[in-house]
Image (cartoon, rainbow, N blue to C red; front, side, top):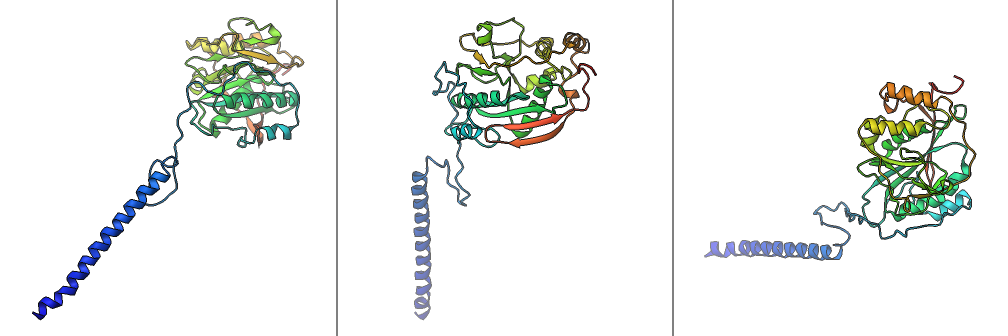
Length: 329
């Protein structure tokens, strides 16, 4: 009798423990359900060990709802601070990502540059809003060459391609002259299956394509296409010839040039003086063809002597040791 009475407290205690455990478990499950209901839109799951809410934005639509078609180019020259104030949503280095969806295209704009501050202000003041409406994940890279070395557009485009690739996993590269401003945001800055020539219709050329093999001004290529053709040639110092050589490389690798129609791929050209022409450009084109276009990304050597991440763009200045092809050298 005494033994039976002695076991009663232990039985009661055991029941209480099980009851408390069930109540605690029910409380935890209820709180998790409430928590999940409250934060379902912000967090796709609830972790037992809280590590913060991980969200994945939906993919941006195929056609951005923000496009307006034809746009008027703003040719006023604002101060740098004014332009920066116009785009508070930019990350340093001229980088942007859509806030409400995952961009379908990761695009680097490569802008070869020399002594065009006014053009650069006008360009940036127009191009950022243009690209934002297209819902792109993009960055702008302005590439400059040491002043003592003659301008070399193609070499700077190669440098920009390599340097931008170090910063982000860009899949598309738009090579963009600073004096060309797009006039229609349906001209999507993305890369199709074939290299795209984008500046089809320019106002100074009466909105007509000068010739069918042109690939200068503004053009777009994927990373794979650039690596396939070995990029641009490095020896074209002075004005002209590098875009014709790029066309030869595209053709050599059985690629074709794609274009939007002239009513979409429209550009305004800012007034500028003509650069010094390279009198050897035609000989260089013939030489590249004989050498199977071996000069390019694979042979490029340069030193970065300046790098600044500004709000509106990333500025990179480089120097090169070998200047073969420079007139007078």
